[in-house]
Length: 59
Image (cartoon, rainbow, N blue to C red; front, side, top):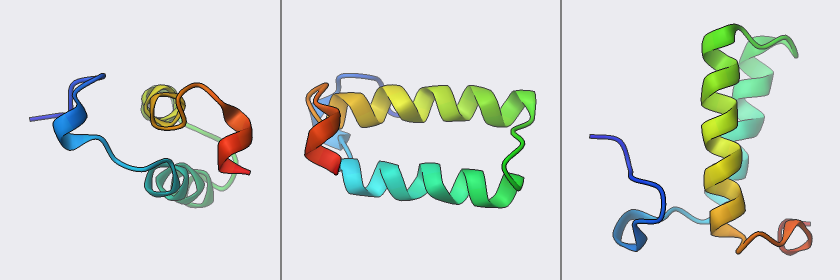
């Protein structure tokens, strides 16, 4: 079952989500399919939640 947004019991760290985002881009060769784009958008939301909405915390 996929993780529900906002569920703290299974929240992954921003670093873990960031790695998954990077892996997705690497696998796609920089050109996301529609399915990959949907996954990318979900990952961005999860990453933002993990950083508390602060992009600077992942830098």
